[in-house]
Image (cartoon, rainbow, N blue to C red; front, side, top):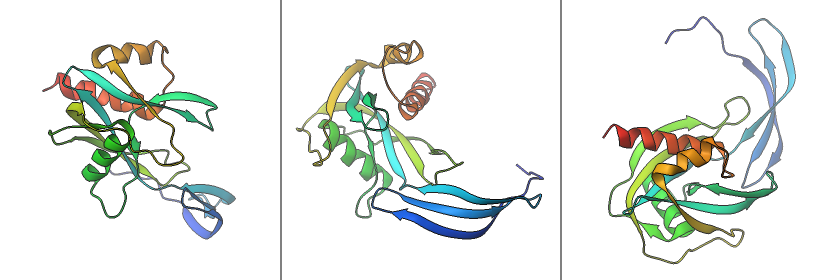
Length: 186
């Protein structure tokens, strides 16, 4: 799709913070019209994978956990970053197993890849659909994770989202409606 717009030029970059979780970079940018922005902050997060997980009984597997920035507990789909050279599919299957104890013999279905917030973040999320899941293991959580796996009826979960009857986040809602559309078009 051609565009007549021009990209910004990065004149200078410096890191304000670096950690295993995020790097915060301050860029000095020149816009196409010559305007200079001296302190445009960019958050460099790692890419991650997430999945809508549906059991043989058409229950959706969600994880509930406290989110400090949101100061509350949220229902979310299993997600995480890849480890040790994993493929995206290996990463999401591991995350689902660790966070929920659920597995599936059906290969994950790729739903799409999206930038999280390209205005200020560099990371992407790849979203999958995992069907025919069943509980096969106990959770295997990291020291900082306190997660409860919860089951919800897949077909009615969209109503809970649209009527604000569950506390969730954008990635879960987006993935749910993508999975719902994919399953309707099978």
